[in-house]
Amino acid sequence: MLQEAVVDTLQRTVDWLLKENDAQSWWNAHTDHAEICLSEMVRMSQPVSDPTKGSSRRFAFDPPRQNVLQAVPHVRNMVAAMRKRDRAAALKSGRAALAEMKTAR
Image (cartoon, rainbow, N blue to C red; front, side, top):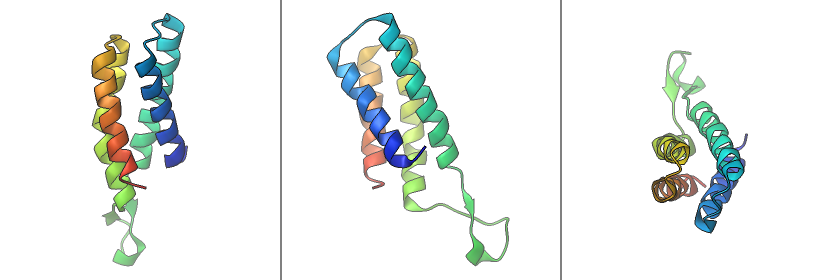
């Protein structure tokens, strides 16, 4: 999943949280999407080997990866809040994650 797709999915989740639709099926669907985003963000934030360092044991973070890494805890909190159906906490964490992700663009 590309970073733009992650941001788009997170934005759609935040938009849904603002609508206050409490149907269990929507909570389940959006929580599932947020969990997929989280796992993709964890994958995206992994360091990559830096060929300029001359060794496969040296790793580098580019700025967008760093921003994804900083957004991961917010998405974890959002998913946990969504599992509890705590809309306010999920919304707060989702907005914080988006702020981190959007600075990576």
